[in-house]
Image 1 (cartoon, helix red, strand yellow):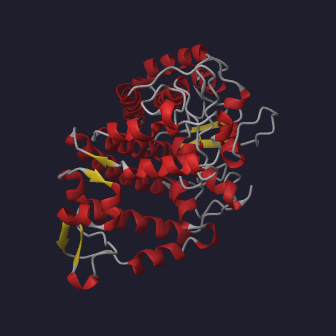
Image 2: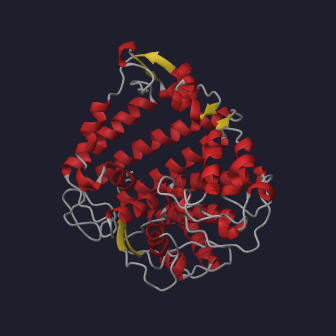
Image 3: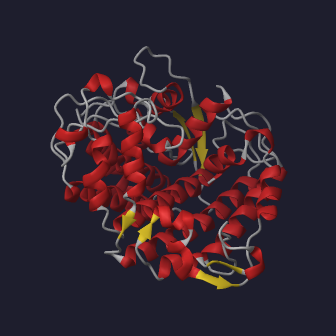
Length: 421
């Protein structure tokens, strides 16, 4: 896998449903990850959820299955309304390989919010279930990612081209292949990986809650025909060209470029549910806590058996990323977590290029979330929108971040960060 393909595959880690179970895996857990239909998968998940309170292994597998179905809620909603991904390395989540839908249903702003709410609430359920697993539980389950998958098109089946391995391959190639050429990716997931997955559930909840905290109807009406060109959005008949003229890449046609500019310009969102913006910060802080727990558990491992996320003592390149983890990367990542926590707690301030260091002022990110004001992306970049959050204090310097980045070597900070969580 090339470095670029590895980066794309790593970006998908934030959407990857992984899990473990006890060394003697519950039968339902095996059924969950080998299911060929949604009905079969759901029966296994119901069985695991029923056994979860008395069995850490069942709770672990159930929490992963709930994460699984959260992704399915999102993918199904996108497919139902004819989502068409404008391919762009700048927007990795827009590379999700949602199959074509020749007869999409109309989409309204309220329906799109409902999809986000259902996705977010299912993630919350997953995080709670995974959080019920004792930290010292004996977890270890071998999962072949060419068999585990999600129903991307709501047809009730989980086919080989909907496997996690196939989706990751599609992310690196730019499209789903049905030729059975998806890489063989088998891992033995352990207790540490549960903290990892729970942390990603918190990360995705933070993103969903941030969107839902605001009224983004104007952006939806003015630019979402770029994502759902045949879902009867307000400007479809005016601004959507014939299918052959659309282009697959976000910068492959004037139409794509224009709508991307519109989307950025229309990120000027009034706050409608301030408690959700506050919750987004709490989710990010919980993600940081879970990442620390993850690395504590990884460092305590003495085996080296098909590790999803190996520690420095577990030598060998990871088959997914092609990277090997050293102590310097772990220490740098833990420093990154401390820096992020300091920013979210307001102990340190975020610099802005428009605010000179001599003023001693920076952005208080805790107040950004806790005292929400309308979010304007362009004015946040250019400066006016961040003025209410400026205050004097200790500012994170570029030198601090550069020092951390150097510890990640040629693999790059972003690849490691998406993998590490």
